[in-house]
Length: 476
Image (cartoon, rainbow, N blue to C red; front, side, top):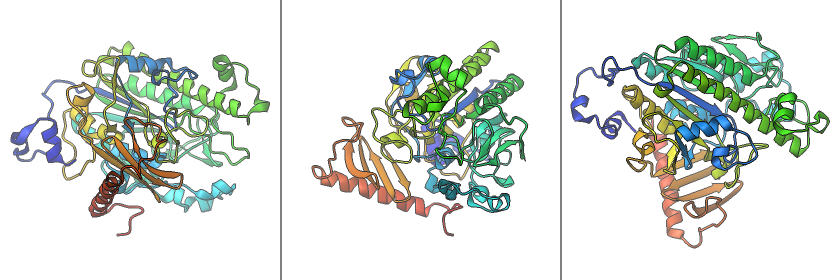
């Protein structure tokens, strides 16, 4: 969506478009404070791993309460089935193929137990890769409306100085810069990964990561409660830990907490399927506790009614997760890899306790937050989403009629209620309105429809190819 279409969708009209020098002028009436924004992202969480989504095994009382105060989205998609491109799309409002970050900034040799020496890691892809510096991220735009922005948790969009959060519009940063860490050592395959601001730090080594991100988010809210703030909390939970030892530890959680919440747990049986599931469940509930404390602090200061809270998972669930009733999971472009739980609590705007099954995506968040803050999206930047406020309130149907995914050789397109998948894990044409689990392939029954979806995918590919080139993968 370009700026002209955004203005039409938000009902601002041609008169405002005709104003000279309108770039960066807030649209909100003078004197009215824009809403605070708390954006929480979990890492590899399953579609069925929240009570409010029907899960019965994992305790998520605070997220369930959040859903009771707002709306639960049941057809909400991310743009990629793994972390880096998904997060890039969230913060830019653009397809990975448009913003240039359409694969991971990750060293693959660690999969074969290779330990990178310090000097080699410094020049490896995981260290030098990053999102194109020309991309405009949410916090930079929110500055126009006087917001202060902080990120506490997983960054994953580049580790070199020019790629770090403070250079991308954030005012505060405490977290790790790559795709995964050990929850206590804060290392990725023995490489220290935690930063405060622009500087590496080991000040909190030995403390459980979720505690740290909770602590920093609470401090940020307390510090900036009297002005508009954007608090982005991308937890690493319940992502598996990044360690070299075999077998891999998977998701990590404090043993006493596992036992307190989920019963008997013996570390000697840590590699069993049940033990891994218990650690996963405990990590989710621990994160839920942290989210509850953040919500309580908003309430304590009386600002919860002027705060938008959005929660979703960056992609489908991985090891230990439950993606029922969806097919597949993380790294796959079946529904289990790209359709994720999402909750939006927007007091006074979004009906409490509602369910929204409209076709929506993470690319809608950028323009929606711009509209909520009373500012235009950046001039000259093509957004692939739209302001979804009227959809969340039930006033209109979603403007999203199609969406496309590509992960190397894997391709998918959803057009209306139908979805086409062509991947190494399987292919087919599916009617999501009656087959959310993608079990019945309609390719032979509806060949013309199959060709239509394939042709829409090719048209999208051509559109992405014609976009202004962005690094680091594209040759230009």
